[in-house]
Image (tube, rainbow, N blue to C red; front, side, top):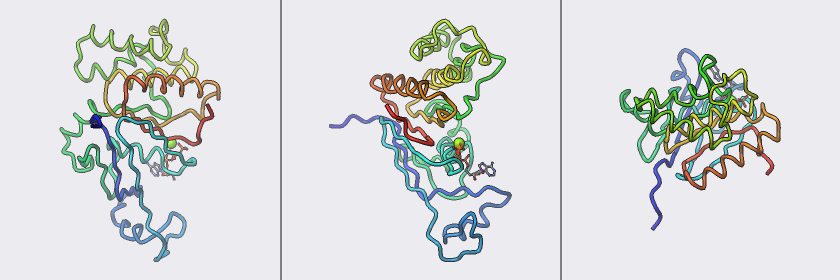
Length: 229
Ligand SMILES: Nc1ncnc2c1ncn2[C@@H]1O[C@H](COP(=O)(O)OP(=O)(O)OP(=O)(O)O)[C@@H](O)[C@H]1O
Ligand SMILES: [Mg+2]
């Protein structure tokens, strides 16, 4: 019997139209209205059908501007879709009441942002422990957890440094340590590898692959291109 791992994600009929009244244009978009061909009536349906199996790494690729960051933000509802549903283990994130959504964000998902999103006035440790502080984890336990993950991503000894004292690759590993410290079953990575040196990209990838053997999270990585191993 297959072991149930939390975190299978399904996205169905999801749309996001940016602007003051996206909903007003949803029917037209469903009928095939495209970015450029605003008045076209009979184009194909713009829909997304993506399934991310639980406990696995799924890489989703797309060119710059294709909607990777937009899509990832729908999964923990940092932005509301104009229409559609996002099912995480069968529960529609789009319909979650605020309190439940907050719980879901804090405990079920962790995110690595495209631009790292580190807090500049906090140390590496301070950044890594941030989510745990929000969760109300006692200080010492938080420090222990954060230090353990910093070590796992190869940043032991750098815990007292500030983000601007680190290279891009190191900053990204802080983002990864911060996400892993949360211990959420779903890890969403809006990758910024394209901003990094190819060697560092390969390095990050192997860190993640090694860790995944142990952590077995649902990992969705949005990427501009596939990395060579
Ligand atoms: N807040 C917003 N308001 C208006 N348009 C937006 C907003 N956010 C994104 N867009 C548009 O939505 C489209 C998708 O953008 P998105 O940032 O998701 O692309 P991406 O695939 O992540 O690109 P990149 O690889 O460059 O990070 C783009 O056309 C972008 O201009
Ligand atoms: Mg992006």
